Image 1 (cartoon, protein in one colour):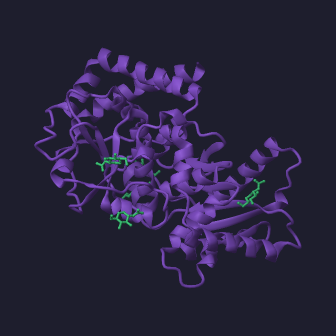
Image 2 (cartoon, helix red, strand yellow):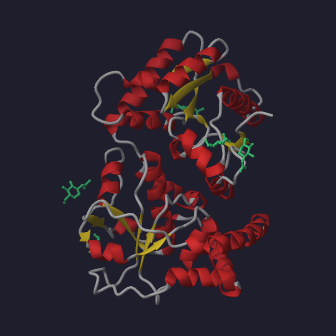
Image 3 (cartoon, helix red, strand yellow):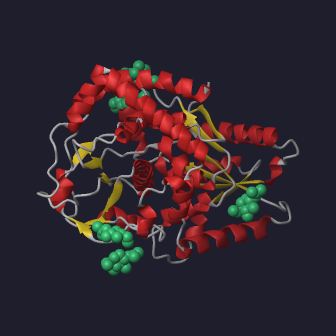
Length: 400
Ligand SMILES: *[C@@H]1O[C@H](CO)[C@@H](O)[C@H](O)[C@H]1NC(C)=O
Ligand SMILES: *[C@@H]1O[C@H](CO)[C@@H](O)[C@H](O)[C@H]1NC(C)=O
Ligand SMILES: *[C@@H]1O[C@H](CO)[C@@H](O)[C@H](O)[C@H]1NC(C)=O
Ligand SMILES: *[C@@H]1O[C@H](CO)[C@@H](O)[C@H](O)[C@H]1NC(C)=O
Ligand SMILES: CC(=O)N[C@H]1CO[C@H](CO)[C@@H](O)[C@@H]1O
């Protein structure tokens, strides 16, 4: 119940936020890169709400009914919804399927973004009964790494895609929940855009997500081989390594953090505090835990930076670099291997960004991540917090 009450508080906050956002709620649409869109409604993808436990389903039902009440009783939210729902889409005329809702997603960004977009699409469509649709480009990137992703099949017309209502989920899980009100009579097809990342829903479809985000053997095998080789190398000092995947996001994030939240990149000092925090956390959950078994596997979009900086920690800690697994000629991007290695670690540390997020989410151990990155509100962090992912711990990005 406590969770629900705090949720109510958040809803009120969200209502204020949506009030401000309403003018920009419908965004200018980026042109679809590709005219071909895959459409799938295979058995595995039709609403698999039965995969939720009864308790989760009940909570979700409560949540949706609560949100429906909020929506009808708060006029400015309603106005905002009306903006989105304005104008009925003529499905048959646009070559759209006549019996199903279709929901798709704006497929920009790197691997981490694409995983967030896919996960949002999967979670929302599964939970609401919309039929998920994936663009060909999006599908092609994901299928290169995750062969279990089932989207494939007949195509949906470009005109249907263009007729779909663009909806900016605003990175607020509550906004996503509006979709659960199922505006059946007003609009059939919705296109989620603006880097959707509805973390709030991920745990509700965690089993499906972990299944779909299973790395293909050509990526998983070298990742496992690498960890085995490291283990052999250090076995005289560490008998049972406890792997910690560390992801350091830099390069263009410097600019991104500045413009989105007037923030700056974290320094090595952040990772040192994160390592201390992780040790404390592991000690609390297991008093006999021996921190000398920790092996940090560091990956980054700026490998020279991590190699220069983390070297200074190597006297006290065992530090290895995922990039050292890139030896040999792989027919895929090395960053796939980085994420796969991270997913096979026992615990995680990252600073920000969806790449580190997914490495940590898939590893599913204790995770240390940052908040208070800049002086402006950080929707990326505020998006993760309400999900209350178990064993995720926020620490300040910049030391006191
Ligand atoms: C997807 O469909 C295309 C065209 O039918 C086919 O060539 C391809 O092998 C399919 N991919 C998967 C992963 O099933
Ligand atoms: C941006 O951050 C700088 C440095 O922390 C601070 O001095 C400045 O006031 C901030 N600007 C805004 C608009 O918050
Ligand atoms: C963000 O960039 C602007 C323009 O370069 C700069 O004035 C400002 O100080 C930067 N903010 C921070 C927190 O560094
Ligand atoms: C840690 O991760 C490794 C590699 O994935 C796994 O073999 C091992 O069982 C994990 N250890 C614990 C304590 O979960
Ligand atoms: C539009 C489309 O291709 N729908 C198909 C998706 O998969 C199911 C189950 O295999 C088919 O029955 C649909 O016709």
